[in-house]
Length: 214
Image (cartoon, rainbow, N blue to C red; front, side, top):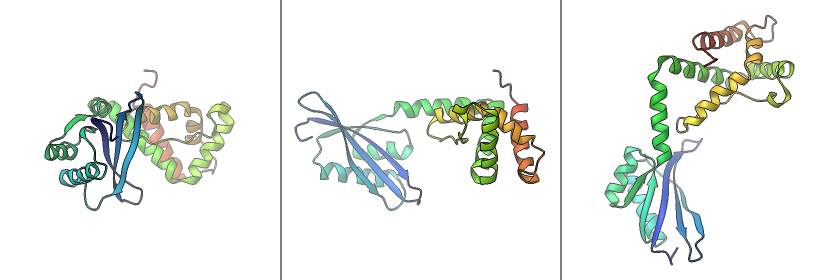
């Protein structure tokens, strides 16, 4: 990096499963042999919240520690990221992928029908994630009704920062429809009456309020 006149960085802040805050800084540069290099400069625990001031101080420390030349940065479009780079007076570009995610999320929220299906889908996934007996029963139905390639697939939850994960979340129940419907209409005592009522509520309200052939 010392031989580079300019270095690009990407920066993000995130929270671990133990609710600890971290910042992550990666440098991107081209060597004299025209090879693109990506190097993690820092993954650091941060005390306090991810304010613009805290982010600015952390980035300034990275620049000094690594003796970086002029920096051009790419970050998400959060207000604290924008403020940090205003404080530093560094060149910053908003992440294009993040912009697309914001556009798609806004589009998904416009239709009440779509919002309803997504909300019910999340509740259905949450239920199976929280109930081991329900998940085991679903796995058993899969073995009876689905092709081998779809057996053992658990329902998946979407991630707010990735719009395509919402697509994946909704596709999974559609592929698992025979197993889920069989479980919802199971009159045996595989599930408790409360659990069975919960599955029925999520499944039939969701399927009944959308045209799955669209």
